[in-house]
Image (cartoon, rainbow, N blue to C red):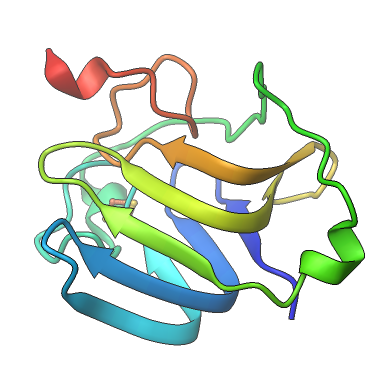
Length: 135
Ligand code: FES
């Protein structure tokens, strides 16, 4: 199963594939084929979206502008590989494993083996982390 992340405009990251999500201590939070993760920073149930983005008027067009785009070698052979996500404490979602990140219309995309995604809603290069969470 190919791992995919759809970035929803003004909303969460929708993950599908072979997914495991751990907290910073390594404890498994979810092991599934689908997950909806908050990227507005306002959820009461981190790292999962609880719909708070609708009340907080989170705005992001969900454009994919990947300045560190990778080209995966033998991507067909790697598509079954698990996507491991670590929720860093007061920081980003660290994703390890092959994944294609797209906007909702799938007109923009990038493919990575490793990527840090914003979950505080403050990055100037959403959906990617730019370390704005430190401020
Ligand atoms: S994106 Fe839905 S609660 Fe943050």
